[in-house]
Length: 165
Image 1 (spheres, one colour):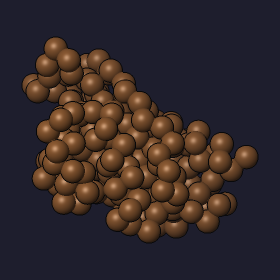
Image 2 (cartoon, one colour):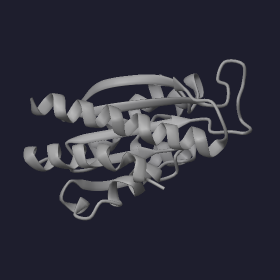
Image 3 (cartoon, one colour):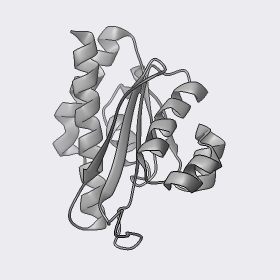
């Protein structure tokens, strides 16, 4: 399932081990797939600390500290919520890096403003939000989820290596 992402995961592992850092993920629409991809690599306990599946709004609030008012104002699939998920994970765990994702994988749940395939991703390092971005992935539920995994891992690999340079 994650064989296409092995090179990305290896890049992340090498850079994090070299830096003596660890990472975690806060996942909504991917339901743990990013964490599963990372931990598919033997020895990942050296650099992967934890994953939080915050599928519901309540989980985002209780586990990551996302304010309910923020979710009410922007929706759970939004730039604001993705960024808060990443910062919240860093605040609640002994991590150096956090990757957060929230989106609409479909086939239901989309709207004119947020069609199926809309995903927000956020990357944070040492308490600082580095990047929050929106993707629009086509295809089935599984295609959207796998594209989200890949996009998150690619961004993380690039960011960790950039910080390592």
